Image (cartoon, rainbow, N blue to C red):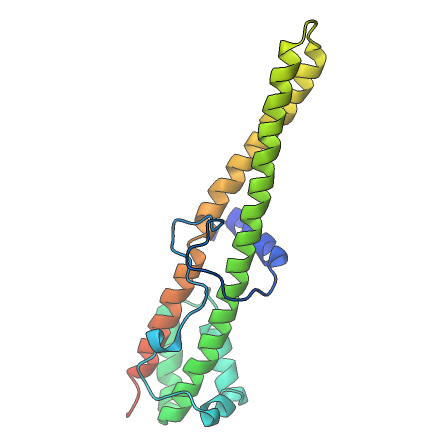
Amino acid sequence: MSRQFAAVLLAIGALAAPAGAASFDDPEWPCIQRKVPTLSVGQMWAGPLITDEITELARTPEVADLAAQLALRRVALPEAEQMIADFAAEHPDDQMLTAVFAKTFDLISNERTTIMAGIARYAGKQAELSDLIASRRDEISTLKAAENPDYDKIEEWQDYLVWDERIFSERSQSLTYVCETPVILEQRIFAIGRALQSHLGS
């Protein structure tokens, strides 16, 4: 992960706030990827049902510690799969494996929700900057159309415009990469679910 991308993710995390479920058809959603506000356990897990008992098991230190590691994107999937295999060897219990999935799902889903909320807020800032750029262009046109144009003022406003357009372009490029993050998280929880399911009944 590049430093620039990491910085953008941190900025988005800072901007993000808890959000409720949104519409699938959100005209303000800036990403090419379809907006899916929440993930469904049923789409990611074909193992035992997550019952209250499973939820309690998910709070135990051994399950919570493993789930915290599995949820980290810096932990490569092959490494995560080995962690799961080691855990399954020590805990050959379908309920324990299901609890690991339940906890990991919650952690990744919560991270995804935070990032998506941040993306929406980040896009809002871009919209505000776009409006500012448009107003600067209008002002420059007005200044140029004056009977006695103030060229110093025009140059000043053009400098503002160039700077704002540069910021807008850089943010747009960063946003393109950040928009991929929710999908990456979906793929990760699905892969972890499959790895855990491969040890069920063993």
